[in-house]
Every structure is written in structure tokens, then in C-alpha cells.
Image (cartoon, rainbow, N blue to C red; front, side, top):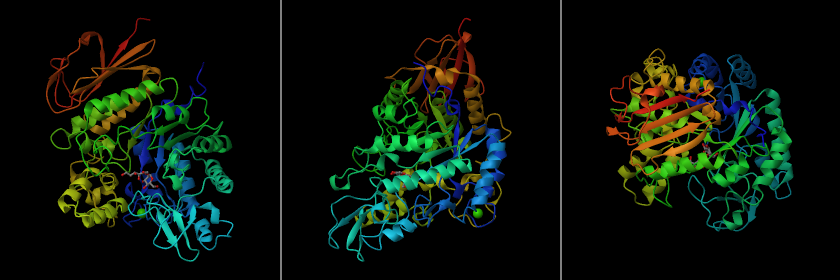
Length: 545
Ligand code: TEU
Ligand code: CA
């Protein structure tokens, strides 16, 4: 059966995520803003991306850097005005770039007027926009914990009730069981579509259906009912990309989320590979070495399971994750080679690739002191773990490895002060390595990480096999190589990556002479069967006509 969404633009597209507060400041207040992004559209068009996923810029008290929205239909003055937003959408369009808005629908800010009303009384018409439980002060309804530490229940003495919040105290969960909440949300989304939004990223969307009394915080029984209703009401039949953030997604669930019949979303962000380097059943801060064979097994399974029955998102980074070249590459001697290897490995797969700001430059984690960090998750964890008696050096080591601010250090544009990000004092320190790692030094270097990403984006648009080719993992049990094939009726891709820092001989036969090298990360090849540290190559073969 022909897939309904075969002609979807986002199957050939590459999406670029901008964390606005760290991308480009235009007014010297040390915080990135919409006008700063407009100034950088030429850079993004040069890279070749098709759409920008814009982390939230709506009105917010910034308790969770904008993921706590107090007005879904207005722009926070720190980023600009609604007119600036409209101008960004229009200017981006002139650069052939769509704007994907970040919808935070699981919770609002406690400063949203809905919550300000809801907390006034149990009879208030907005009270049931949120999740409340009767109780006594100091005795929450159950032991549920919030993602950013502490109880998931907050006491409101005026009405002698607790409200539920999976994230910070200032992020009360919205009650999706209430049809009035859903209708308000659909109307707001429709308003953004009419403003010209090209799509939406839906924050923790699998957490909107929950059963707090049973400790269920995601994948509740009504989840797909809500998603299908939202799709029907606002997305269906429009030329939009919709990508849900679903930490609990499995390939089976993703077949629902990304069903080609357009009944739910275009795709989801799944995180099965992302949580591999933490101790089983513990937190991301409890570090463990990456189980490489498991990484291959997971990515292989997602490729195979969704082929023809759904669609993958492909990512290593986002604003919540450490930078991949520091995490699973080598941000020292082989920073450039390993950054390119990780890019080639990911961009040859089936799905829509996402590039997080600075990933295309090989930007790295930042090793700061605790007082330099701004992220609520990091600061709460530091305090909680100190109180529990953890060694401060161990806590800092976890933050250096996994803290979200690693991704949020200002974009490194050039070697001038503050990397060209701001003329003011940056809200978060610029990574001191900006003098060596910055866009200006890479834009005209064909051997740069930037050039590698630019070429991968172009290759995806040139050869259909990137989009419609089957996927076959090779060397599944090999402890060093990540290798796979893509194939359609006309072409075959062979992607071979030495994932580690040793020199190895590729153990399979390959018709080196008759394959065309599309891209590699070393500038010459003496013996094709030999792969140097982090060496990656993508070959193409053209089938007989
Ligand atoms: O993240 C969902 C989420 O669960 C992450 O916060 C994750 O648990 C954490 O980052 C792991 O370190 C989304 C947004 O991407 C994140 O920035 C927000 O803080 C969160 O939701 C609440 O809106
Ligand atoms: Ca600014």
C-alpha cells in the first residue's frame, strides 16, 4: 500500500535545533534573541538545513529556561516581540527554512493566568485545568518525585489542596482529562499555524496522559486518544512536521506515533540509545561506560521496526543532552575525526536527522565550577546529592559528563570576545575553547566539521537511497565497527565507522575499486581496508540500469 506520507517534505529534510537564549544576542543583554536568529539565517541556509526547531520563546518566568510558559500566544520580551516572531517566520521562509515551534503542553508556568485563577478556589472555572488532590499539609497524596527533585505534589494552603507537577514547582501539570484544556490548546496551536508555523515539537508529549494516584506519569491509557484528537483537530491535512518528545517510546509505540496514515505525528524523539551510559535503574548522573553492542542493537532495531511502518528521528544532541563529541566521541586529539564519524554514522540512516546548534562545529562540553551553572536540574541535583553525602568532586564529574548546560553554552561564532555571541555579559559562560572551535574558522575549510555536515545534508537531498533505502546492519557483534548498508532499486550505500581510537582492519570483503566514496573524515586513503582512529567512510554503488 502506498504510504500516505511518502511525499512528505520532512523525509528528505534536515532539522536544526536552536536554543534561542544561547544562539545569537542582538541587543547586548547577554541573552540570545529572535533578531539575533534573523541575523544568522544566511549561515543556516548555507549549511543547507530545511527547518529550525525553536526551543520556547513564549512568555515565561524562565524557571526552566522557557519550558514553563505563562502565555502561549505572546513572546517573552527577553527574546523580542510577536512582530519579531512573525518577521523571523517570514525571513526564514525567504531562506527556504520553516520554523517549528516548541509546544510545552504537559504543564504551564504557575504564573500562567489559568493557574493563577485555578489556585484561587476549588470552584474557580479554571481549577480543573490542573491536577489537584485534597490532603493535609506535610502529607502529600503519595511518594511521587518530580524530575527536578523533591515531591511531585505542592501544597496550596489557601485551598488546602496539593497540585501535581512532574517538573519544577513552577511547572504545574495540565489536566488533559479536561476537554476545556484540550480545546484551549487546540485553539492556541491553530493560532500558531495561522501565524505561519511550519511544524511543532511537542515537549514530553507521552506524559500528558497520566495517573498520578497510581504513579503513572507517562503512556497513560488515554494518550493515543488525546494525540489522535489533537492531530484531527489541528494537524491533519496540513503541510506540517510534528515531532513528539517521548522518553518512554518503544518501536511498537512509535509505529502508532509515526503511523504513515497521519493519524498522530510525523515522528517522535525516542531516547532508548540516549540512556545507555548510565547505571541500570539509576539516574543519568550515575555514569556507566557506553555498551557499544547495545547501541548498535538499539539503533538497528529502530531502523528495522519502523521501516515502512513509521519514521525515525535521528539525533545525538539536544538542549538537554551533553555534546556528543565529548560523550561518545573524543573531544581531545580526535575531536574533528570523531565529530565527523558520529555525523556520518547518523546521517546515513533512514529518518529525519536533527542537528543541535554547534554540533555542526564539533562544539564540546564545558568543564565549569558549580557556580557557573544555571540549569535548575543541575543546581537542584548538586544540592540534593551534597545533602545526601555524595562527594562534591563526584557530583561535579557527573555534571561535567551529563549536565544540560553543556549544550547551552553560547554558540561559538568566531574568535572575538564571547565568541561573537554577545557584546554584553553572556547569561552562561562561553566555553573557553571558542578561539579554536568557532564557525568563522570552519566556513571556508573543506576539511571542517561544518563542511562535513553541509555535505551530508546535500547528499541526503541528492540520493533517494538515503530516504527510501532499506537498512541492513553489518558486523553486529563487532566491538569496534559500526557498519551498515542502505539499498534501493538503483543504489546501495555502505557506511563503515570505526567508533573508537584504534587502527583496525575492516573484517569484511568490500569491492573498494567499484564503489564511489561519497564522504570520509580522513583526506587520503592508502589501504581501503585499514580504518584509522574514528575513521568513517560512506560509499555509494550504482546498480546496473
Ligand atoms: O525534557 C523532558 C525531560 O524529561 C528532560 O528534562 C529529561 O528528563 C532531562 O533533561 C534529563 O536530563 C523536556 C524539555 O526538553 C526540557 O528542557 C524541560 O526541562 C522538560 O521537558 C520540562 O518541560
Ligand atoms: Ca538579547
